[in-house]
Length: 317
Image (cartoon, rainbow, N blue to C red; front, side, top):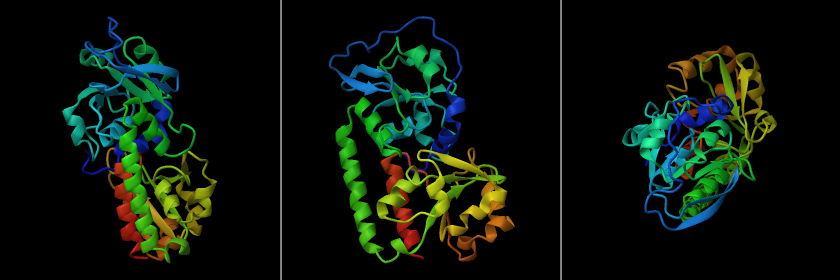
């Protein structure tokens, strides 16, 4: 389990997914069996590439994208290999895994072959990687959004692939119980202000979450209204802006400042952006209602952490 559950790699994946799709690496010369030796019971799951027969209880899972490894850890699945996420703030668990690719998403197929997984899970943008792996191991590609925008559909798809739907039900119940608690506790404050969640990578520009994904899922579930700029971001996107466009956030009464830290957020980048006169002149900044933290959500562990932070923020406004 992650001790600091905000994924440094998660936000990078949202922005870099399209460029990371064609990962390189060395190829394995010999095909492997499509199921682990001694594997017995199997089940069929739906993936972005159609039905795939997978082990009912996978024992050696490899995750090949940026976000799915965190979801698998949250589900307590038997993750054996992942790309190198050890440099992230929450990278400690990855030091115990077999590293099967670098932090740019380039896979080492020889390392995957050495591990000989009984299940490989990736994201639906990883067409090239899928082509290399599908004939060697049961390989499931998960859609980033599924039938709905936001992180919950991806969690459910990953959970289905590893037969952990019951775990998701328990996590969702605990999450909803917390949402209900906070809605009752802060019922007077929740509708009184418009919120937005932004961040920066380099201090020279900024990003804004849409109204359904990442931290906005928790905000929306609580019934917190969004500012106009947030509602204009296309669902399932993290929109990039220049510093000169900061005035778009003047309609937000409360700003959550998403600072994921190095290597995603450059050292000092957040302080640089927040010191800019265009930022300090914003309504929320002048009102002292800018709150720092790691707000991105990709799994229920993240969601519960963010709800705890939102409880603290609501208590101060």
